[in-house]
Structures are given as C-alpha cells and as structure tokens.
Length: 592
Image 1: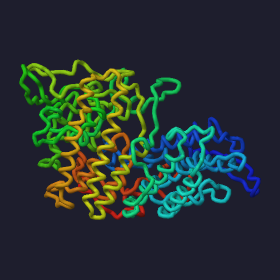
Image 2 (image 1 turned 90 degrees about the horizontal axis):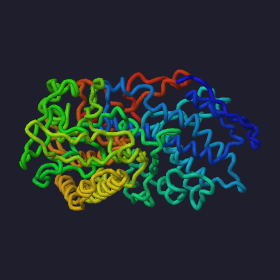
Image 3 (image 1 turned 135 degrees about the horizontal axis):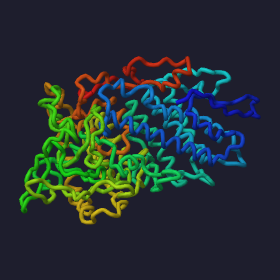
Image 4 (image 1 turned 135 degrees about the vertical axis):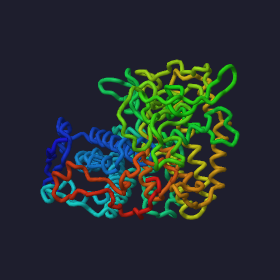
C-alpha cells in the first residue's frame, strides 16, 4: 500500500470554509478522483454501498476466523492479527464514505431531496464506525476529514464513538422515514425505506447487546424478523469484465481445483456421527445445512473414518494416512490435545470432510481435488449430493470423480450476509440467558435455527445440476424437525453453567455453549458477530484449540492499520493484542 494523499476540495458557500480529506489510501483510488461539487449523489451512494460490502466482507472473514467458523492459518495470534487486519474497512470509511456522505449532504435540499441517500449512507457509516471500535477500540472521528485544522487527527474515546454512531443511526432513521429511493440504486433492500428502518433498529439492538443492555435487546421493536428482511449483497455469475462472482467461489471453482481450507471444528459438529446413515439412534444428528455449506470431493479423509456399502452391508472404513496429501495424518497428536475432544479432529474429520484446524500453517499439498470445497450457500457453488454411504469394494470407494469445476454449481451467484433475521433471534436468545430466563431463550434459539435452515436451504435451487432426490432428502421436513427437536432437547436439558475438566473442556455443555455452537453454525459465510460473542460470553468452550500449544494472547482488539500509523503521528501503534474495548469485561474462553 502506498502512502499518498487524496484531496477532495470544495468551497462551502454557506460557511466560507474549505473542506477536504487527507487520508492514507490505496493508489488505485486516485484513478477517478471525485469533485464533490459536481458528483452525482446516485454514484456516490453506489460507491458507499460497494465500499460497505467490501468492508463487511473483511469483518466477516476476520470475525469468523477468530470464531472458528473459518480456519486461522497461522500459529501465533499476534503474527496473524497485525496491522493489516481491518485496513480495508478503515480506508473505505475514512477515504471514501465520510467524504461521500458529506457530498450527499451538500447536495441535499428542498429541491433535491436526497433523504433516502442520506438515510442509507449514514446507516452504513454508523455500522462501520461501531465495528471499527469493536476491533480497534479508540478510533479517529471528531477530527477526521478536516486536515486544515487537524492534519494529524487524534483518536477519540471508543465509547464516545459508539455514542456518535448511535446518534448517526437516529439521523439515518429520521431521513428514511417516509423517504423514496427516487433514482438511487439500493443494492440491499430494493428501495424499501421500511426495510432500512428495520436494519437501523436492528443495529441499535446489536449495540445494546454488545454493551450489555439486555432488557433493551429483549424489548426491541420493528427489527428484522423474517428472512425477507435480510440484508445481503448478491453476487452474480459473470466471470470477466468485471468478475461478479462470490470470492469463495472464485477461489474454489477453478480449473486447478479448490484452494480454501474449511474449519475442521465446524464440519465435525455438523457432520454427525455417521451422516445421514441411521441418524436417530441417540448419536449426534447431521446438521441439515452441511450439504449446502460444503461440497465433498473425496471419499474418506486420511486418518479418519467414513462409511462404505460392500455387497449390501455397511461398514466403517478407516482411510489410511497419506503424508503427501495430508501431512498431519502421519504425525502424532499434539501433546496438549491428547485425551481431549480435539484428539479426533485436530488433523482430519469423519465422514469425508477434509479441512484444517485452528492454527494449521502448513503449506499447500496436492489436495485441490480432494479437500472439501465451498458449497452452494453462501458461495453459489455446488450442493453436496455425494452419498454418505457410497457403494464400494474392499479396496475402497470414490465419488465418481465429482470434482469442482470452473462454472460448476450455482456459478458463484451467492451472497455476502450482512445482517440476517436469524441473527436477531440469536441476539434475543443470548439476552434472555443473561437475564436468567432460559425458557424464552429456548424460544428464540429455536426460531433462530429454524430461520437459518430455511435461509440456507433456499439456495439449493441455484445448483441446477444437483441430484434432485439428494436435494429433496436434505430438505425433508421430518429430518429438519428431528434435528431441531434434538438440538432443543439438548439445550433444555443443559445446565445454565458447568465446570471445566482438567484439560479446560466443559464437563458438560451448558446452555451458552450450545447457543454459541449454533450461532457459529448460522454465522457460516458471515462470521463478524463471533468475535464480539466470544469476548462477551467466553463461549462456546467447545471451540477447537489451536494446534500451537502456546499461540499467544487471544486478541481483545487488533492493531491499527500500519499505513495510518506511519503517516499519522497522533496514533501510537499497540505493542500487543491486550487492549480491551470499552464494553469488554475481559471474559476469557479456555479454548483461546
């Protein structure tokens, strides 16, 4: 990244002052400098929406990685969560969004009503401000984008920035009330001011949850309540000029195979003991979303078990270790994981799921047509119609060379989840647990799981090549009802709190452990909420441990963007990851 300055200059007729922004930004942002006095508000709103989507995508990835929804491919937290962690979000907010919002405000008048533009823009600005506080703590705000008076803007107190963001949400709501989109392109809600208002109310609800105002979460009204209210960015299927496909699809559906490693922990808790085979026998049932999340390319993962049908009899098949494709399958269990649940999944997962564990920093072996790839949700890839019990012989089985292909599945027409109605139900469930009301917590947990499954399974139709019978089986209402019932039975039977064993694992899962696992599952493809959740609750305590016995301090916050620190003497870089955000009470998770 280059250290350069972007100057957007205009004369404010009303005040006679000069406004311009001076920020460290990427070189390519100078390709089309915008004159704020003549910029088209529709185009400005378009750029704000794209920057917002890209920022949320960054936060989803980083939060999901800290929450074990994604794989952390580094053994040390400080090495992983350095000065580039939220640089995209920082640059987008300060270099583009803040000056663009100001430009729209300047163009707004009685004769040029831009209320819809301002409502949407301020809602997105406030969202990113709160998220940057969540990840960084103190950030620049009151002195931002005013280099004439503040050439080196200072950091504001993080709690004060949160308050400012909440005030912006109130402004956004006022602008949106009764507003018409007019000529604006609304990439998220199709021009519905009512849905924007629900989103704004939901973000205020999320802020209340974050700071511990649980009664306000419970009593929040006019928030997102159905999947029709979901805020998401829809990707396309165009490959070139420009590429509009989901980024995970681009990474996994290539002529040279897949490249993403998915979370062993998440796949293991969703696969069930034996997948769809004989599921209702007291064993953990498979999650109805697993075939939509991932696409298995290989029968069997080295060092773990799968099932096989030989002559009409189903056997457990133990796949032999293979050091060429899965190096860890020839290694012994790390000593700190012995005699723990991670002993079975630290390297490989049952039922042909092939990923990596938290902290695996190995290189890339020849496994691009073997490891589990992104599925139809949310990446727009392939639905996994491969059988859990393939027919084979004593020498093994295969999936009939069902590898990922360029253009396969849904062609990349997935989504970037930003805020989903299922998340809102999780917020209420958590708030009720904090308020010692497990009955209402159960009601909202069940609603959250139900909405999540319905959302995910609606993507099955994207894959026109999927086996119809397999898709129907995955969406069988009886299977879904059985899974939800068993999950809720476990939640209702779980204690409110439970002790840890000598290895730091819960002796029995408590209610927050189960809620946390289900939140992580529903956050697949998103993930941003997981970083706040684990710091707020210290759950789920069933998280996979890092492969490194001493990975360093789990981040309470991350480092400031390096380019900003090097160009702004008012910002001192942190020396570690221990700085707590104002709402963080220091609750720890034994897995970290």
